[in-house]
Image (cartoon, rainbow, N blue to C red; front, side, top):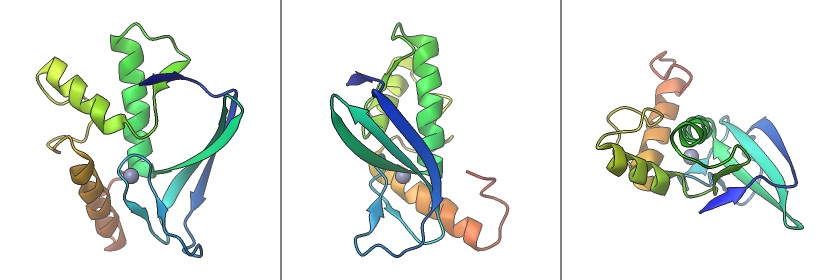
Length: 137
Ligand SMILES: [Zn+2]
């Protein structure tokens, strides 16, 4: 579903302190946001309801890339964007339409929620090993 931008919203980058009892999850890959991870806290008001979504840094980067891709390749207007939680579905459609991975998707990664979740956690452990391989992704 393509939806309109919220009436108002705020984007706040935070670092997970691991204090909440209930683990936080990323809306796109459904993976856990673990202690020490940077994540985006996106709160918005849609049709009177305030909702909060959280994204892994990597998942948000893909989301932003997808948003740009959609603006470039489709006729949607600038204030419309794919609904949160449907990024992978859209990526799969884009991959089908293009006959290949869309350029915003991590190269070589299968377009699926589980694959994305595994990718995020792999990048995170690489980063924690002090490797530079993660390259900010
Ligand atoms: Zn994620």
